[in-house]
Length: 218
Image (cartoon, rainbow, N blue to C red; front, side, top):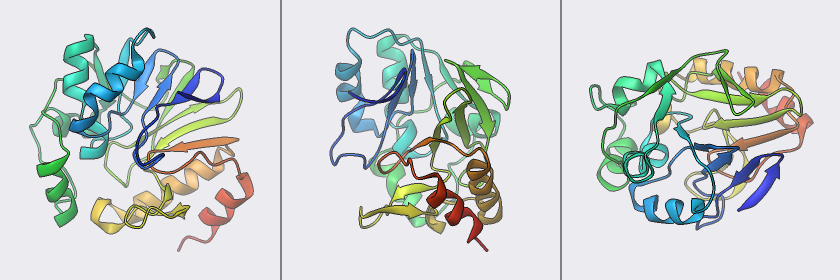
């Protein structure tokens, strides 16, 4: 595992930093695709893990969740606005061609949510901040003492189609509500994070670049 900050690690994957999962103290953040369950379980062997928390519910973040929760006896957490999707009671959104394709190739089985997240909750020293737009239940995990944020797909540091690095809004094919998504990017920038860990791409430490990106949004 690669250490990013105190108590925060990114799990190795291939291609590197294409689809990220993190260990935040004893909390696994996100679960990649259904094909990644064995890899993630192997990488976590010997480490205390007591919860799997999702930044949001899309196939490349919930894919291995059910298998990992069952095999490692982990409770599952996500925001209330994504809970019914994770539990298979509502369809995954948006209903774009890309999401439909990933449902067939990457999506894991539905799984009961044991812990419903809301703004102000705390996990492993990180505060939960609701940041909708990419999905209705997208969240940021933010640790105030050192300015570390785990921000899922609020935005990315990698083009999801070309895999070229750089700050990007998530494409329309993955975004439920564009104006909310932009407000959430502005919210992230307003936290003035020292490090931002996204679902896609390497961690970002350039505070000025993040602020410039947010300020340039329509």
